[in-house]
Amino acid sequence: MGGAGLADNTVPGAFETIKAFANWAAREECSPSAGSLPVALCFEGRGTVINPVVRLLAPLLAMLALAALVLTHLLSPHAAPRIVTAQLTLAADIVVPANSMPAPELALRDQRSQPVAVSALRGRVVALTFLDSHCKQLCPIEADQLAQVQQTLGKSSPLSLVVVSVAPDTDTPDSARSFAATHGWAGDWHWLLGTEAQLAPVWHAYSIDVKPTTADILHSAVLYLIDKNGYVRAGFVSGLKPDVVARDVRLLAAGGSS
Image (cartoon, rainbow, N blue to C red; front, side, top):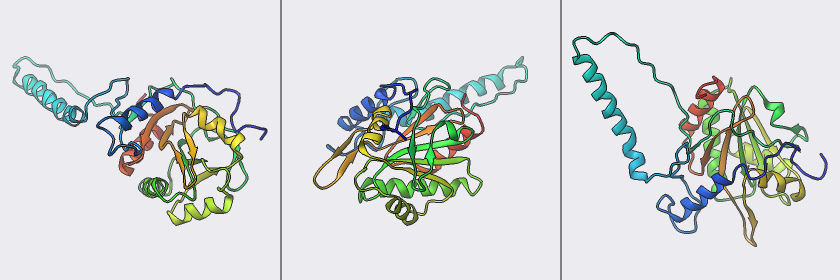
C-alpha cells in the first residue's frame, strides 16, 4: 500500500471548485446558520450560481414555457405531427459533464483488509463519501440517508458505497462494521482505513478538509457519484434526499445523462 493512499494518476486541485462553492454556501443564504456545514449548494451544473428562490421557480417557469409551446403547436392548422422526447438529467447539487473529471484513484484497504481502487469498481456506480465511525453529529445522519438509498435501489443494486475515513487514529475495522450495522447498511460497501499519511492525499485530491479538535473531528461533508467509467458525475452535500440520490445512481447505471 506504500506511504500514501493515492495512485499516480491523481489530478491535484480537480475538486477545488466544489470546495469553493461549499465555503461560499456556508456564508450565504443557502446555509442554515452561521458556522454550520452547508446543507445545500446554490450551484447548478455549468458554473452558474443562482438564488434559491430562482432555483425553486425555475422548474415552474420551464413547465409554463413548455405548455405555451405545446398549445401554440396544437393550435397551428398546418403543424406536422412530432414526437418530443425528454432527456433525463442528473438532479445532484453539482453536476459534472460526462468524461470531464476522472476520479482520483485510491490505493487503500477496507474493513476486510481488502485493497480497494476506483478502477477495480469499473462497471458499477460508486458513491464516495468521507466519515468518522465515532461521530455523533452529521455522520450518523448521512449514514441513515445512505441506508435509505440502498433500500430504495434494492438487492440488485448497481451501487458500491465507498467511505474514506477521516479519523485515522480511531477508526478501525470493528468500529466501521459496528457503524454500518447500526445504520443498516447492506449490499456492497467498503470503509477505507489507513494512517493519516495514507489518507491525507486522498482527502486533498477530493478537496476534503479535515480538522481535528479536542472534542471532535471537523470535516467536509460531500457525497460524490462516480460513473461506471470512473468519472465523477455528481456531488451532494449533507442533507441528502435518498430518492434523488437513488434516481441519479439508476440514471448513471443505465448510462444516461451523457
